[in-house]
Image (cartoon, rainbow, N blue to C red):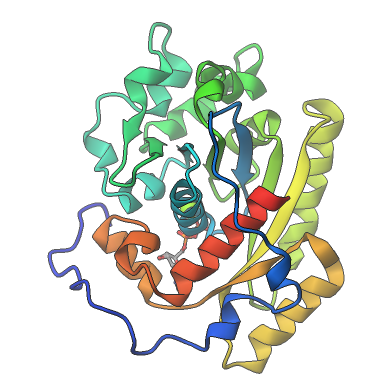
Length: 296
Ligand SMILES: Nc1ncnc2c1ncn2[C@@H]1O[C@H](COP(=O)(O)OP(=O)(O)O)[C@@H](O)[C@H]1O
Ligand SMILES: [Mg+2]
């Protein structure tokens, strides 16, 4: 799915098919999430790794749309595509396989600096460090390097002062790339699909986070768990979300991301939902999530 399909859906005013507004949030303490104050100056960045070793749970979608919502609130945001699939880059309309320099070059080649690789996106205040399939070679090559777990942290250091938030979209595994992300992150955000079995993998992820805390990054914290793929019409998904809240309590974000075709559409359009369908339920849900990120 590298090329944007030629029949990208038209942008239309929204009113149809949008699910009930209450599903934007669980309604527990919605009103307590404040509007973020405007910033006078920027940085140093808080680094957030968006991680879950299960694929298809909304990591990439959450990285793009949370990033775009944070940018709407005046934050300077850098999105790091740290999955060789390059879905984050593609989702922002960047044909990453055609790029001369990507995060792979930044990690592996001396003389490549971060500014050679950073690109602006169509959203003001939202920048991208793109990747493509080359990054899968980095995972292999890094294994023999000294300080292999800190390669990403070293690469990001020069731009920390420029951004307020850096979001790292991790690959669906707990391999060396994800460990690099966790090793340099301040916080981990865990998207969790509201489906049976999605809870199982979280224990393993928590284990990995604890190991990284012990061995590499004692300051790493869990920012929260974001429920995604929520279908307010089915009992099953409501039950799963309830179980997530029972298991993780206040770690669970108030914001809930509904399952809607609006998200696959945005991939084809190559832009975030906040600009593609700005008044949609999905855009509002990611704005609420962004306010929660800033409040936590
Ligand atoms: N809330 C949602 N509702 C419907 N489809 C979604 C939603 N979030 C993501 N998707 C779609 O599901 C697929 C997987 O999402 P993605 O964000 O790529 O997950 P991950 O990065 O965890 O693998 C993509 O095709 C994406 O467009
Ligand atoms: Mg992904």
